[in-house]
Amino acid sequence: MAVEKRLLSGDEAIALGAWEAGAVCGFGYPGTPSTEILEAFAVLKGVYAEWSINEKVALEAATGASLGGARALVTMKHVGLNVALDAFVTLAYTGINSGLVVAVADDPGMHSSQNEQDSRYMGKLSYAPVIEPASPAEAREFIKKAYDLSEEFDLPVLFRITTRVAHSRGSVEFDMSITPEQHKKTLNVPWDKYVMMPLNAKKRRIVLVDKYEKLKKLAETTELNRIEMAQTDTGIITSGVAYEYVKEVFPEKSVLKLGLLNPLPEGKIREFASKVKKLYIVEELEPYIEEFVKSLGIACVGKEKVPLIDELSPDVLREAFFGAREKKKKSEVTPPGRPPQLCADCGHRGVFKVLNELKVTVAGDIGCYTLGALQPFSAMHTCIDMGGSINHAYGMVKAGADSSAVAAVIGDSTFMHSGITGIANAVYNNGDMLTIILDNRTTAMTGRQPHAAAGKTLQGIEAYNIDIPELLGALGVKNVAVVDPFEYRVLKPLVEEYLKIKGVRVIIARRECALLK
Ligand SMILES: Cc1ncc(C[n+]2csc(CCOP(=O)(O)OP(=O)(O)O)c2C)c(N)n1
Image 1: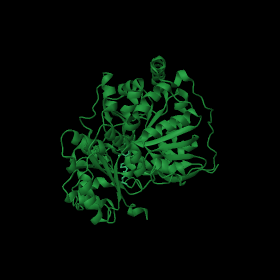
Image 2: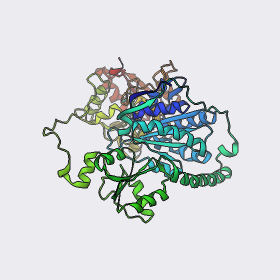
Image 3: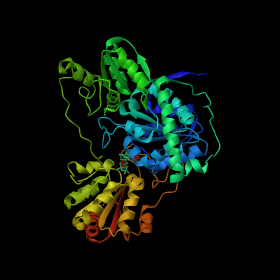
Image 4: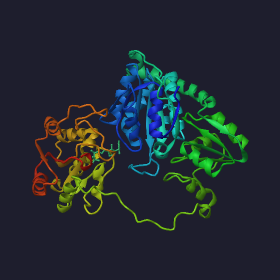
């Protein structure tokens, strides 16, 4: 035994815990604050890890790995789970072979996300267990339990973290000299379990509901949920990082800390509620626990006091419970705001300069290039979901907008993630719009991860570099041009010309991300 203590982020602790639990395959798509989980997992001994092309592909590939007999880890941010949800919901019906855990990182406060959705509901929707740690140390410990639970109940498990758990560092004990537990099984795919035609799915739905009833019993006894009794005038039910804030702000109060968030433990909640005079629910984002507690007919105070919007912190709780005067004093000096900007040497700048000058209505997408919406470019008018831009521009023109004054912009990683289908749809349905692919040869925004058109895998292996112009040609796009966005004298007339052409046409503005060099 060579037990060490290190300061690890929650993301790193998840990677390590999964490895210790014998996960040997990891699949994911980058997305803050989840990205570092797979990056940390990819360098561990004896594992296979990849950036899949998107989150749905990652989950499906992990499903294959699980059926093939390997414990599998899947990583994504909360919005990625929307992309993978089609696969996830029915995977709960089929179940798994070897343990499968989906680590999903929510982003309360939207530090780097387009929405603030609460993934705990996805567990409820799909009947899958949801486990939530409060700290990096718990992340390592709980993910091992998640694998055991996955195999015990034959279900995929959602392992939900939030930004503060993912990115904060804490002391984590581990032993790198161990050989991870081996859980290797053999390929096992009985057709009546995995072919979800109605005949089988109807039976699997019954199995799923039955498993859920058993999970409810487990929720009452599992160590993942614990009561910490202290003063009984007030009791607080909480989970995740909110638990840490509760312990800091209300150190003398009784707490029910939930680590298993789906299903919730009715009996334990009733027991705790009966022991305290006044019950509060302190949770980030939605009133997920609160609604359940109220549905049991138990009086409690939750979102009337604890904000629904933005992340919590000890200060936010102090303000909510004791008023602004109790807030810890902040610095008197307010530093000036520093909105993010495209790097000085970023190729995206050339494209947005031209789009601004030509006064084009720009359907945008998600990546560094979303900054093209800000000054001095002010050349992006929509940005809703990954891969949406092409379809937004397509729909605008279908509704009557002038196709010579509209364009979609999309990054190369985003195009591979979910842009290809938009082009295929537009070609099929006689679309008429210009798309500009901002090809900087990397997934820059999330930290420069390689992707399917960038010639390298996550583990640094040379890979086939999917040729975007050839791909577009195969999809039936007749007009495709490749240009360096810093060649202003070439780019501007090219964009003018391509705005006027009819049909689906694509310009690839290719210049390597300045930070790659
Ligand atoms: C469904 C979903 N998955 C992941 C993310 C996280 N994310 C935001 S932008 C981005 C990719 C950006 O890469 P690219 O399109 O190449 O643009 P660049 O940042 O390089 O300009 C990712 C992975 C997200 N917002 N939504």
